[in-house]
Length: 174
Image 1 (cartoon, rainbow, N blue to C red):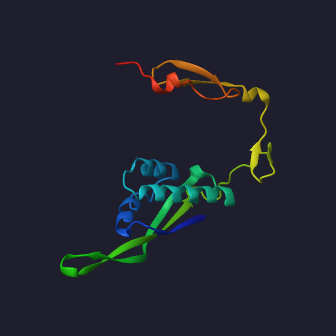
Image 2: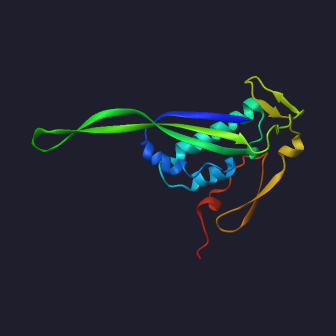
Image 3: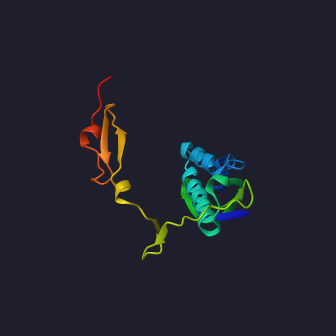
């Protein structure tokens, strides 16, 4: 099955967006997200957001498995132009076009027809969101975190869940 998502009127020139979008086709959604997270160009952030939106739409609306999705194509078209004037010498002006982009991402399933299993222990709360039922024992489980100083600290999820300011801001000198 094919899933599409569109982003209209992105205030970045299509030429600059195409450079970033060119590396996505053929990658899995997870790998494409990693690539966009590491990319330093300004177009990477809206493209990453659009990619995650397309994946979550496929998961929510069609029960597709996100690990099964591939980026099949990314199309970057030219949108509207904001026409401005740039003042020049001797009272002249030159036109300045601020270009916009329309981006469309198409995802496809790697293995067609693979659906996400429905969890029988979930229920819908008043806001319409599904929540999993959890026991009190799982809420009090402890997790180990490593601070910047290299010390292991044990925190429980049932407590405030905050780390001490010492472990956050102080490091051992090397």
